[in-house]
Length: 366
Image (cartoon, rainbow, N blue to C red; front, side, top):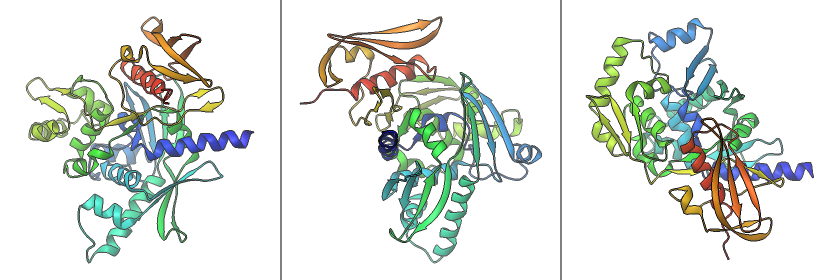
């Protein structure tokens, strides 16, 4: 029975990965620096080297410690996005790992927007090296509640003769993290995103993608969340100039910027989707929903759901709170009531989204 449950969980993680680009947390904490390439003379690179290949950053979304031979950049995030989007197969392994099979040709073509060139051998060598750099990084993330997660994103890079293609194996500890996290799908925006030639702007866009509703953030709040060296006056000056010159580009992704007040306003993006964490209910993991998300909790009142093989109608949804913290959503139906716990101490906005997505996964369809 234990093996059966493990296979079920792994199957759902596979489906979640197939419908995702990344977890939200990976984009809200600075695992991937907001640069194209780290100069050896940069503040970040010098501190990383001084600390023996360790970078520690504290943000309002948690604390992250990154260890490795090289820090990851937006180039590494671009390549992972391409692999997640264009993987030909997503395969579970008996070791509770997941393999993504991909064509180097397709990934390089998507990334560079170019056809095969005379330098193809150098390009494929470069791609493999970047993937190995991702493999060599260890991440330790501590959320705002104090929960700690230690993982590598990738455990292996292999060539699979059976598929005549390369593959990356996702670390099983990372999969446990992926399973419990809210994830995001911006595959529809990837081609346009890859055409943005500023790594900082890419990082800002990805960060705002993680917010479903309209939201307003100060420039310094966003830069701190991205791990930008705000203590460097010169870097900050260049950064502000870069953002100010790209207001139109940001607007194409639903992001407005007031340079005078140094405030971002995000209008949301209908092309970006959200996938819930895999809740446990009666020892069964839910399937990843592929339905359109409602706008508010109130929209869920009156819908029919299938719960324990019986059809029921939602009568009311209320939040249980402890001070300012939302502990759970209490769902009252015609015949049975249940709770959805806020296990990760999500904000009201993020928890509402997770509740909606979970309830939509229970929609009854004849």
